[in-house]
Image 1 (cartoon, rainbow, N blue to C red):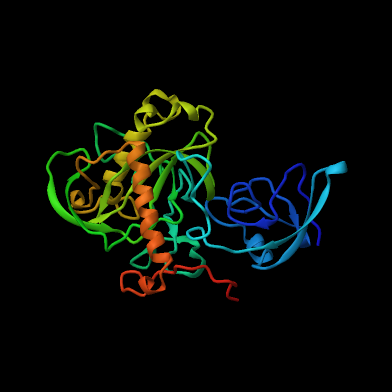
Image 2: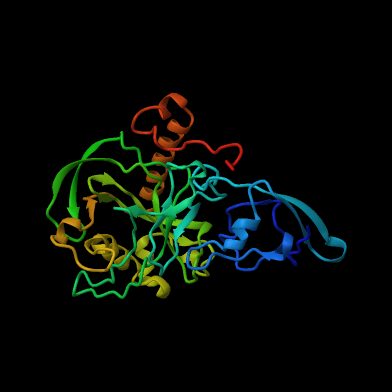
Amino acid sequence: MRASLNNMNQPKQVGFGRTNMSALSMSAAPRISRNVTMNAVKDNHMDSEMSKTLANGEQFVQTIGDGLDQRVEFLTVQKYSPWHDVDPSTDSPSYINCVIEIVAGTKTKYEVATKEDFNSIAPDVKDGKVRTLEYRGDGDPSKDFKFSGMPHAYGMIPRTFEDPSHKETVPVSVIGESQEEMVEVGGDEDPIDIFVLSDRKIPMGQIKCKVIGVIHFVDDGEIDYKVICVDADFKDIDSINEMGDLKKTSAFSTAEAEIENWLKYYKSVDNDGKRLENAEKKYGKTIANRPTDSKEALKVIEECRAYYDRIVNSKETQEKKEYKKLKWTTPTKAKE
């Protein structure tokens, strides 16, 4: 078995990150055994040859560097959980590592499979059908956006959990409307959702990003936070610290309005893009009068990491009915 990767210093373990040899995050790829190339995911689907070739635990060799710096490395493919095994922490408190589940401009709704071993990213299924994102941006005639699938890269923050047992009664209103009602809400039993703004197309996989805000979204009576971030590789990243800075950045001048419009109306259409009867009942809501700045976003992340830690570190807590169906550990060996 022989593989080569020119002039790139790759880690010694294939995994799920932008800086390693994951098929979920790389567009250039080495040659693996049997002359099969690791290709990037196209339209959210893993290359079928790669998934057959790189079985969990398989060993292979790659060559890196040139001349005196050339090294032949021996690697083992290791399957792991994007929810449990990706560390969201970085060397800066304003930045986090997250996992992209849905590529901007694509329609298939994917999400991390919290009830399955290894928590792979899987299609979201409702009524026996894969959900697709068909809202086109025309929910408000005065703000006609042109969406073709998810407007921005969308994913989740690893090692976070929106705890259903954490209940609070809060004022809730439809996005952009003033009328409020008091509602008891709890977490939606998922990791925190995240939008990542970028001027490039980010594939599925791990990415580092800068936290700039949060929307206290409420979905069917559950808290479903939407943290807003910017790709750490964006050239003018230092000029964006809060959502208010987006309007001053040409690449993202309409991003906040796009996200709010999307969250308000995306559930008002079916899988064929047809407006539902009584669609207004599906309009997105938020908790009223909550801060949305970066400080609040980091606070939300910290709280949801604490909820996650409390459960993942206690077998007894994991056995409670509200958590029992979820997979809280990564198997030590993949099931055949």
